[in-house]
Length: 198
Image (cartoon, rainbow, N blue to C red):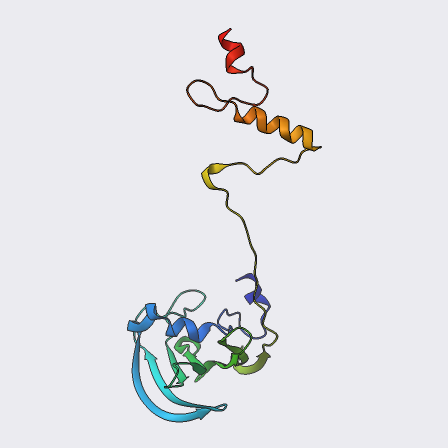
């Protein structure tokens, strides 16, 4: 949110390639009404273009000081695979008093290395006060998967402590293996059960 102050034009947080995905997420299914469909090619993808209108209130996108900004969504979907090839969100702010729609259009391409559709380009038209508009374009490439690993020790065991030599390790194992008559471990350095009974 802090970075939105440094955008060209009016401050905003909608110029993200994930914006159409938020509208299309299953949790927002009931917010949208399909108002039209037709077949259309989109960047090499033979797709069905879905036209959706946001009918729920409050709207997903809000004015900075509060207030609805209804959106219309176009989604180019490949019927055979369900892949999203392109998506476009148009948002109107009626309180500006001008005929203007903010636009965020995202192109998606198949990434063979990661095995999924990923954003390749974003084009935006934004409001530039007082009555102008600006536009911008971003491209995305060289996606990489972040990986990490870890190890879980069962039973709340502690990580092994480093030892100076093999003899010290052997002494530690011998002390840890001793048990009291009740079967509880004896802390390292404690007298043996036999010594305590004597």
